[in-house]
Length: 151
Image 1: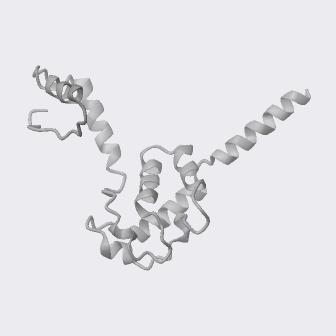
Image 2: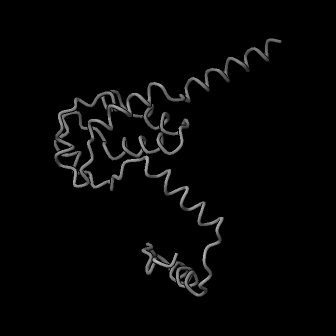
């Protein structure tokens, strides 16, 4: 893209530096199809919450929720509803799920991004309850296999 002058990339090995340098050896513009794909992805990402994972919101949370993790799950639901977010939330200890948020607002006050965390937790709890569940799919598959074996 003509307005991109620099990229930031974590590098630990010499081959990574060389790979990054090779990226700029040719100045071939993106094709129209590549541009459309990038902008389509960018638009879909706007549905999510711009959490940087700083964890300031976690300090003082009376429920000791892992808010950045839960916001990642929220963004998973917003980007593409699948079993992934449900599985991630299913794996949390009792009392640590989005519905356990007491909406005290401490997190929102501490958030440098200005995220209304209690609202996000409320919506995430609804998405989780209504969304696809891995456990349901696994149970259905198990029942189907049992039926097939009894035939």
